[in-house]
Structure formats: structure tokens, C-alpha cells
Length: 358
Ligand SMILES: *Cc1c(COP(=O)(O)O)cnc(C)c1O
Image (cartoon, rainbow, N blue to C red; front, side, top):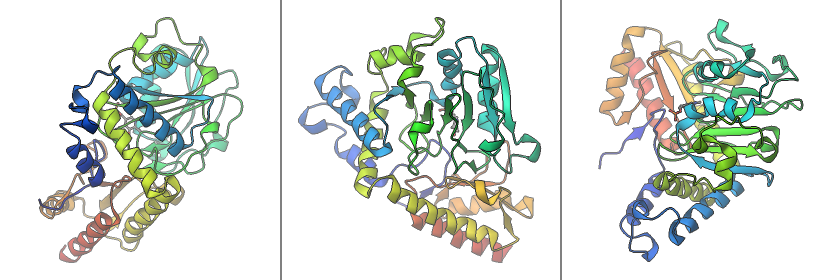
């Protein structure tokens, strides 16, 4: 098989060892005579899988006891509506806009009530994330929402907000599990799986216990966090196979040494790529050094006409998924947990060659 490096933003690459294990277990999971895909979600085999997935996730991400973990469907986008439905309770909410995804969360929330923008970096092209110290928090609001890693614009929060007055809700879809996080600072964390966790279809939601009692009566039961908590994420059939694969990814991370270890890898990878971009005028990345995402690295070539041939040339060498998002153009390398440093080195070597020949 040709060696490829997949730089796609999501659905994204998975660790090779996880795929091989899934392949080995595909037809007969642990002597059950069934594929995980064929199991009843309430049967003893699957219950043992989901219990271990949850306990591994909790220990890996250090989830405190007073938080529930849910395995839902609908993607991060569904949570844009579920957050106000589950939390608003007739109050207002505050939104921080630091890129495409947080703006979309704000827009999706508008039909549910009075939403105010606590801070926005739209006017500066999202080049720098609004500092939590400058967020205008309304103490009577139900929550403040932000996106801790903007996948399209490549903007990441490293100093997470520490706000005591109202619950903080974070969309961590594209950098969850890339480093340790102090979960006690958050009311709700959610993430679609297809960036840094596993296959598409699964959405993980972490909710603090005291926030489970205020859902609007209009909340559909599948999207009511409390109902899902009471039914162990099984008010309907959960996305069983995606949850199983996510569990294999958690085991892979635990064996690697956990999030402190993966964070070190991720820092090295990001430094290698940004370091090269900054060393030449041929390529550029516009994001403030303090907010440059370790997971999604958008960059441009000075001569914009070269983007297409850059992407095609990379594909010919087995480096796929480098085309920038259609909204911003240019090039984007998504370098999630499963991307080995060899992939970044191959990309940087190609960037050097491309620069020389153009
Ligand atoms: C990909 C992404 C989404 C959208 O996720 P879906 O699973 O398509 O709903 C939302 N927020 C962020 C930060 C993302 O990266």
C-alpha cells in the first residue's frame, strides 16, 4: 500500500494501530462470534464496550466525578441548538466569536432567545482570539459560549477562561484530547468525534451535574442531556461502531502515556511546521503567535496562483487533504493527534522543494 499522510480537517486520519486492531476484530469481537456492528446496544458484549469507553475517556481526560459524559449523535452542529435548549431557561446567553464555527454557534442560537456577543475578532479577520479578560460577561446570562479551537481559521485558545459568574460552554471539536484541560473551569464541553477522536457520527458531551435540570420542555428527548444521562446515552440506538472505535483511540492514547505525552508530540509537530512557514516569505500564516492552532495550520503562498499546483503536487506524493477550506482558500494542514512527526517532516520537505522550483 502506498504510504499516505492525510491532512484532512475532518473526517480525519486515525492511528494506524487502531485501524489494524479494528480490522482484526471486525468479524469476531473477543470470541463473541459477532462484529461490534452487529451487536445489540443493550446486550452484555456492547455494554461492556461502552462502559470501558466511558471509564477510559474519564481517566484520560481527567473528567471530575460531578460531570456526566454523553455519547450522542447530530454532530457539534446539533449542540448549537441543544446548548440553548438545555441551558437557557428563559435567560440570555453570551457568545464569543473567534472564527467561523463560533459565529455559526451564535447564529444557530439566535432563534432561542436573547443572544449577545461578549467579544468578537471578526473585524480583524479572526487573526487573534478575544482575550477572556476582555469578554463582556453578563452575570445574569445562562452561559457564555466559545470555540476553543477554530478549525477553519486556525485559532486556538491556550489560556482557557476562568469565569466564576456563569457557566462556560466550549466547542472543543477539533482539539479535544490534544492536551490536558482543567474541566472544572467548564459547565459544558462538546466535541464532534471526526477530528481528533474517531469516525463521524459520534458527539461527546460533558455536562456538569447542576446544569441538568433546566432544559426547555420543547427539547427533543434524544437531545435532552438529562434524559440521555438517565438512559446511559441510549434513549435511542447510539452510534455503536463509532463509539467502539473511539474507545480504541482512547486505549491508544493511554498506552502512549496520556495527554501530557501527546501534548509534547503536538507541540513539536506544530513548531516544525510554523517554524518553516516563518523562516521564509514564500509562505505565511496570519494568526497571532499566541493563538496559532496546534491542530489546524492554514497558510498561503505569496503568489496565490500557486495554491492549486501546490495541492496537486502534494497529492502526487501521497499527502492528501491540504486544500484550504472553501471559505478562506489557500492551504490547510490539519495535524491531529494521529499525525506522526514524519508526516510533518514530509510536508516541510515538499514545501522547501516547491519553493525552490517556483
Ligand atoms: C467540524 C466542526 C464542527 C461541525 O461538526 P459537525 O459534526 O459537522 O456537526 C463544529 N465545530 C467545530 C469547532 C468543528 O471543527
